[in-house]
Length: 265
Image 1 (cartoon, rainbow, N blue to C red):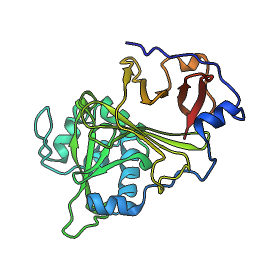
Image 2 (cartoon, rainbow, N blue to C red):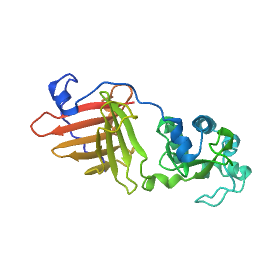
Image 3 (cartoon, one colour):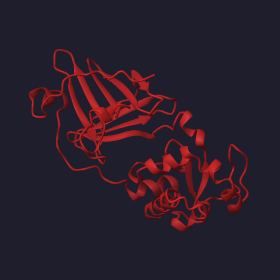
């Protein structure tokens, strides 16, 4: 079903309504993930993780089958049957590195990788990477692909997986999976992840998903105020958003004009 987007009027970012509703503090840009996040949680060095991620994206993007298959840990358990070695991976490449898997790798940003004790997740679980070393943190040479799953997007993403991370007039917003198919909203008015979130809303009151293009909309309630966060709609090309925009934030408050602003990276 196609999301139904409300259409409040755009207003100037300098108006009193925006200041009253959002209480914006223009601040520093979002920090990159700290090295400790990889080392403490997954036992992987941040430098090694980034190097492996760039290597994987390059090989898959250039359809270098032998090089991509060399990054896999064997035997690889796969929904279509176990893969014994690199030669078998190359022979079955299109059924292992499917379009869904390749798309997930291509769209993934390093700073938005999800990390837990299982390893590093790309997309919604289409790819998992883990270390094969005796003494963590593992470096680039010790990392391998340990899971490939084209159907991962049809399953609830793990709790804490960031579904949308963007910045609206200086504020940082994260919409994250709750592990049960729902979502939570965290908002940093300082714009810095190192600070505690200014606002945390653990449950979305409404969610819409467009299967055609994957567009999503989440609505969260905070008393009489609602926050609706959307990725770009399927027809966004008909009225192109500003460069860098990845979504929209709409804030509604009783007795005040709706505030609608772009959310960018």
